Image (cartoon, rainbow, N blue to C red; front, side, top):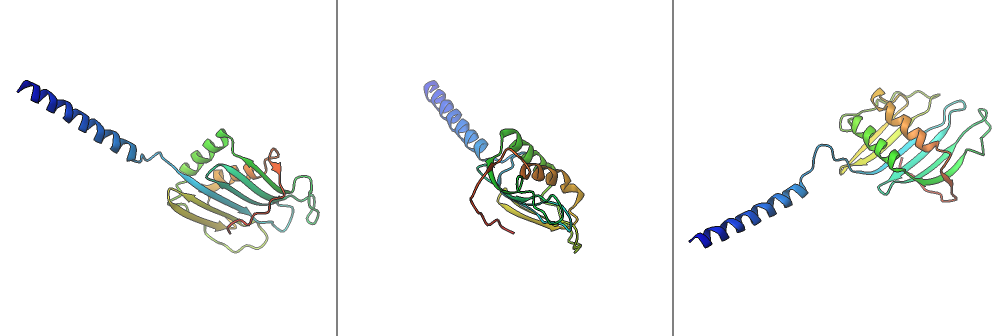
Length: 169
């Protein structure tokens, strides 16, 4: 009888451990954030504001097409063009941190229809969702995210490319 009880106890422990291991691997914590893709557009203003079209994919690949201006009508060719690269671990960690802080599920932009200022568009695919934000006056809650995306798009360390990519609008 003792042998049967001992065997039953071992089997129960194995089953319990197995169930706990499987459920632990399948549960999502509130801190998990899965970024599939982010697209950022900054339109040109009626002045020397740069225009930026940026995409970061799930593999941390960066593609950017940008135009900088020396004057209202003269393009800064040295800093303008199409570029590619890969997010560094620090950049990626910072991006995920800022996206989490932005409260994407409740973040909204209100379109205002101003013609002489840049229009900001951000399209984020995360946790199986898609968030589309577009406005000439983005929410202050997105300012840290916009600043980070601009810095990634303006990175002078990105490699020039001839690849032409149509980014989602």
